[in-house]
Image (cartoon, rainbow, N blue to C red; front, side):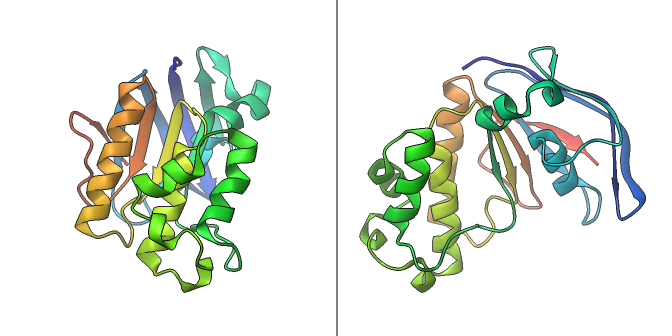
Length: 199
């Protein structure tokens, strides 16, 4: 994986008001950035802008020097975004959910289930999963395909200590293969050496 994500003088609006302005950052292969700040500071909005889901009100967002907006489909393919909602269909099983995404992205659904400790739940309807189990299933999608850019909004939401440790293994593997991780969080994350960006 290669690629540098750069934001220069970004600004974003939400509900008609400026959430942040003049924000610049750079993330190179293998790096991790922690987005910190109080509720309402714009962490989630920034992640959506970086994912290409929201247009910035001002500034420039590039990947390897090329504007992200010039090829939105390519940016979408290189990005994995995990928001507050887990986006899981209740009637599907975890295996069915991951198999759907694997057909689009590649990867091994069984391996992803195992990595997040969900193998024993593979055949149960997702509506029976706890909040923490649903979050782990959403995290398992990160393993499908080789996206160099992971954008994570409160990834430890609902996770117990063992699940946070599993997440740490995923994050280390992503960085080890040259991927980038940006995470908004209020809680400590297993991201040693991560740089902090305060909003």
